[in-house]
Length: 209
Image (cartoon, rainbow, N blue to C red; front, top):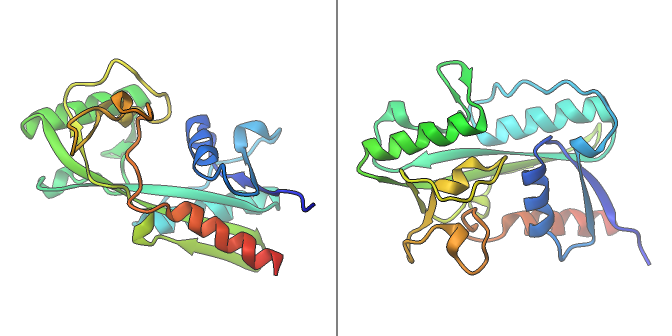
């Protein structure tokens, strides 16, 4: 029996680690967050203009410090029908050079939704970069990693997920219900297709050849 493939997830956000574990639960894959490793690491600078550039910067930066198979993800938030200056892009947690706390982030986007009539249609563009060794860096940002479209609304749900503050503002378009109130009870929007699972399936198959 082959041992599970072990990968470090280049994030200190436990909510992101648990979300990814849940997503790939059916694969022979063990994911470990940086908060579970006894190391003092410096965070790579996220200076890219796109999610795939930032995912790559983070993955390579953490790999250079740990020298162990590792992946990182990055996300861009896209709003439809808003002014260009209100478009978050990759700067979801930053504005005018300042970083938000998670609570400040929740307040900021709640106020923005209020300015646009109470809700904004949005979706996430996700990217992933996996570094297996010094010569093997695999980046991907296909549309199967994008989320479905959803509403960001002005009134937060009573539930709050530290690490994913916008879950409290996320409403499914078809049902007009908060994701927290759906049968799954998970606050985050679904992917259009589960591109993360397909990505890791391809990696595992290539390694086992």
